[in-house]
Image (tube, rainbow, N blue to C red; front, side, top):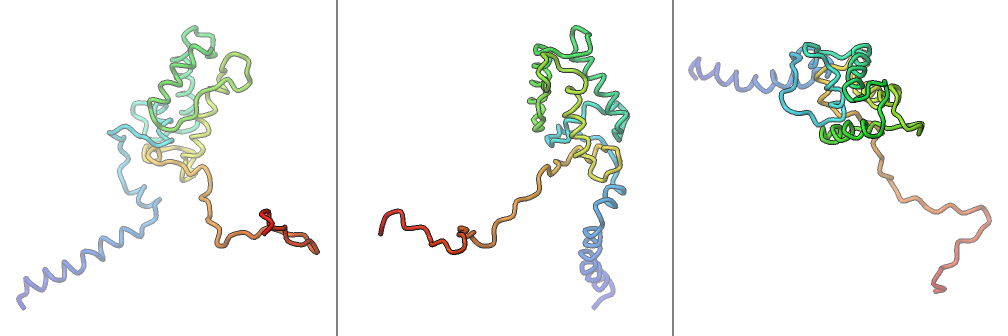
Length: 179
């Protein structure tokens, strides 16, 4: 065999092994090595609800940055500048959240007093911040916006059908058809 042929065969054999090594890296290592760029396309994950709170040159959203962004968002929707949102002001906001198609819970007047105050306004974003901070770094990166949080644990299928419980000494139920 020629030397060139041997090198080519060695390269072909080694390529899957080299590629496979990157497969076994931890998610944190892959995230740290990958450049943090803003997504070009429109995000559709639940975490994308946080996207408007990022500043123009911000790569990671901190809690303080989120609170500042929430105050800006509230001011944007508060047409009468009273620090609260009435029903007419909340409706366009909820329409925009629906258009984002991120599964965002609507902004609501939780205590039923007729207005949505800052705490009620901010509750959905604060919840999403907690769920989307995947690595518990107290920040949410652009990369984390692309994920959907697992809000509930996966359901397990039963391994065997459950048998009806009977009390000790009780007889089985009679057949309903009388057969």
